Image: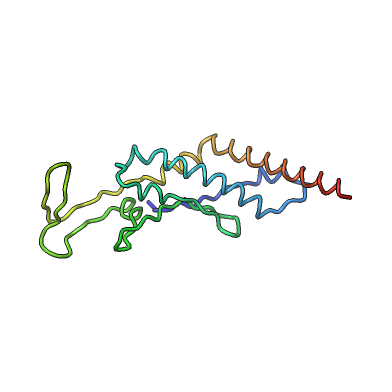
Length: 167
């Protein structure tokens, strides 16, 4: 289970709608993948509280999306880090064993009680991958692609109209 999810989408059907129009393929791909990644990020955040106990919100706030410059891949990721540079998302996705650095015990508070333990095991949790995959395999994702394509076509037509009016 990765702490980040790469989104790749086949947009050949959407590109067929643009045949004969003057458009930039990279810009179109970036719009499609950016829109899908934004929606997928929303799904991760929506499912977050049911999968994890939201405490400080640092991990929740760090869930972001990005699209590479080539426009062929988008990523949904969580980059929250502790003071010691440990990435929270990595620990949650892969699990971890926490042992004391100084001394024999870890001491922390649970509700009103202080607890001393020799180590803590954090079980792996899939808080990103399954919500993203469910979204990408849904009809909602295809509707989003169609919506972005229609908006892009409208923008192209508007630019063509403005260009024709200038002549």
